[in-house]
Each structure stands twice: as C-alpha cells, then as structure tokens.
Length: 123
Image (cartoon, rainbow, N blue to C red):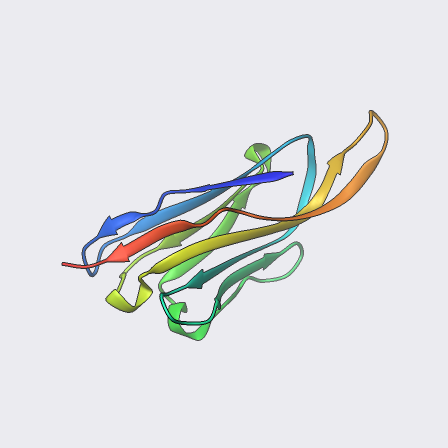
C-alpha cells in the first residue's frame, strides 16, 4: 500500500494548511494513522494520532491548533493546521496502518509511510 502526502506549502504566520495522505490500493480499513514532522537538524517529532475507537491525541506543541481526521470512503487521512507558527516549519510525514485486500476474500495488514510534504511558515 502506498501513501501520497500532499497539501504542504508556504504560508504566513497565523495561516492555515490542510495536509492529505491518500492510501492507494484495495484498502479494507484504516485502523490507525499518525502524523510526524521533522525540522532541519532536529529529531522526528510526533504531531497527531487517530486510532479507531479512541479519541485523537496530539503533541503538546500543536494541541488546540491542529486536527487529525480521516475519510474512510477516500482512504485518506487529513491534518488541518491552523494558527501556524514559524516553529511549525518542517517536513510532515504520515503513517497509516490498516488492512487491504490481497485476494477477493483475504485481507492483509499494512503499515506504510508517506513520502513527506514540506510546510514552511514564514512572512
């Protein structure tokens, strides 16, 4: 299963962006999805997680500003980012776990990473 991340770009402080992470293939379901980010010279940082049946969780720096969601009909996960700050500048990566069809009747688990999308917050 491949993931295509998109939606990054250049935005001014205080602005908004919505990132998308679309899973391709015969997706049966998405069980869990995460967003991480990595700024230059820094370690990868947890941003948000959405696990089926549980409330979403967020990293402290983004709480109250970012919202993770998914559209099962499109096999796509989203990250709505509001009130962006310069310190949000990073490459954002999605990680999705679920099941996909391998035959007409058999499913297999997958856990895939997207390629990353650059978010730059600057005036």
